Image (cartoon, rainbow, N blue to C red; front, side):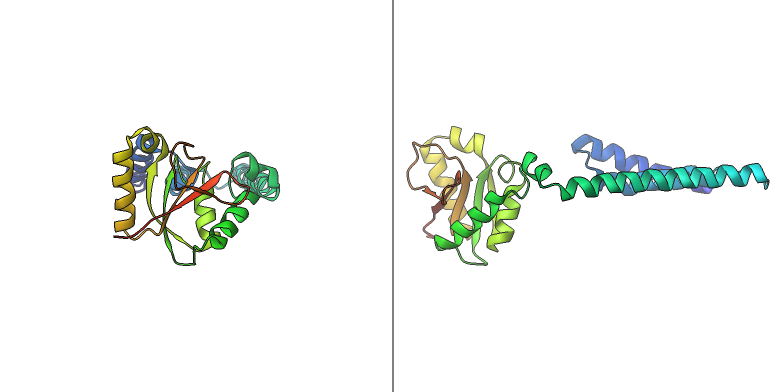
Length: 195
């Protein structure tokens, strides 16, 4: 019994450490499973008909909850509106990827991004995957656009020195020249001259 309790320490430590940064179900799922396993392993029931019914009922309840939660998540994934509401893999991603290719970006090219977090939500990762480009650097848009032109120019040179062929962004400032709109989307690209 006491041996199993040792497993609580890494599980709780993992959850505590992630809570300092960000809690994502996929990050802490293993720790919670470990807590449940340790918790259930400590339960001792006498060998009786009542105990077997409790075990059967508990097992059925856990399986039912897991199946209901899984069914709900699958139904949400099948509903295209969910992705559109979260700005994940929207149809615009395909348009941007096609526009990148039409503007001369080739599969394998290295691209930097200026964004809050790979654009609205996580679209940047989908765009890169669809266009088969590598995202090699990222600058936060609020800091980039607030910087003076000299600082922005230096950053562009750093992107180029790291091998970026172009920089992709979402709704750049209209005052900065050199950005090309990608189709009818709100995404823009700026080609870099490698030194």
